[in-house]
Length: 446
Image: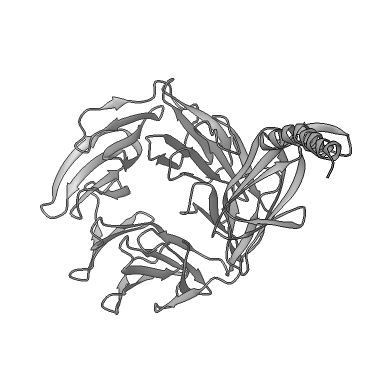
């Protein structure tokens, strides 16, 4: 090889180095070339995470990666992202990729197409309430509320208790799961499972009915009850009675504190469980007259919501007032992390963001998103225990799971087909319990 050829080869490699090296550096820094526009562009990236893992990610129909994955060097554009896993419902959403940014979908929950169901050995029923330890269950038929069926899964024992022939309005297990409180209109029953005895609780004043009873958090022998407009604490073993306050319209217990609404004006107060250290939380009355029914909801971080005759209020701590948020609401539930409020209407489900959400999708404080709107009634709704990004709700013919990420479409799947299902999730077993055609089943959620 001549000296001239060697020199040409050397200079050729130098020229390639000068040309290729900047291209490599630009590519490493997230730049690409748009052949249609004939220009250099800055690319973006996409991060996908799913539960379960190892699901296939497709971008515009082309298989790209397995979850979790970071897909780089995507041109700024709208892309249809699909996440698939054999035996599970697919997830799909059109997301925008921006220059020099990472678009994220971290809370993808793939639901099984054929979940494994377990049939439980109880008498025919369409309503039930499991104890917190999941070892005992009380069930009944909605059209036959005078007979309560009890089943112990540990001892495999079954027993029936007779109560009033009226709709069951409230049902509460004691903290140790040995006693049960049942409200049927103005009548209350105490079922003691230890001696298998049913006792009707009577009012201290025959002219006033007992409106509400809640177990004392410390044990199964103490209760708080509202008789007329007077709130009492009672020790069932010694029959000791202590008056907490008068002119009470409603009350609840959370975080070892009492919260109650006081008339007139429905002002909100809190005390400790002995009725001491009284604090007035609201300084303005609720501008709503002749309220018939209220539900005080306390969040894990001390947030307070109030549903009063289908009007939803949120407590503004700094202003010390209740603010009206939405009407035609049946119930409200704080998320496990306390950063969101799930609200349920006759056929709609909304989510209100109580904290600023910096992770994607980003949300502002107070932002309200419509999650579900159906042409049929919504029966129940709960937060999915896997995270605070999915919900479980029931209709007349199915149990459904939906995400709350409202970018593009909301992914919603029919988890289980069931007729007028009644559901309850038990954290200890990580199972969802539900009825279908008067039979009780459970299914593992995570």
